[in-house]
Length: 110
Image (tube, rainbow, N blue to C red; front, side):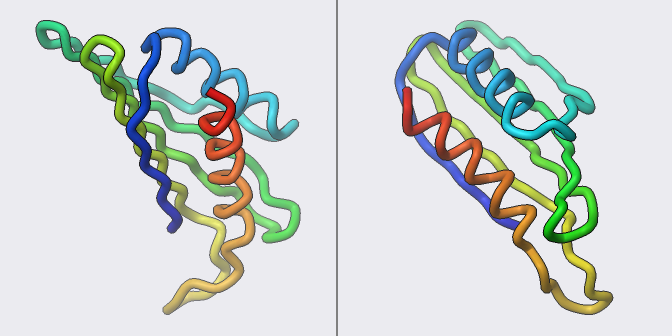
């Protein structure tokens, strides 16, 4: 499991769209699995789950994205899972790191 978290400023809908489109365009095997949206007053929170095939790992990895915002104050948490081929401990986490790197690249361009 790998994790990336970041506070940022911007338009919630625009940041969410850039992340969604960027994740899906980052790999031909990337897919949007499901999501959830929540509003409470001025606070908004969305959860998105993506999956893709990792050629190097020979398996599928998932990316769980949470974006919370109050106005232009945003917080992003991205966590990857899967990809390991060991039974009792994690080895071969290249796919997780590569999936998370895509999110990092998108955020750094904001």
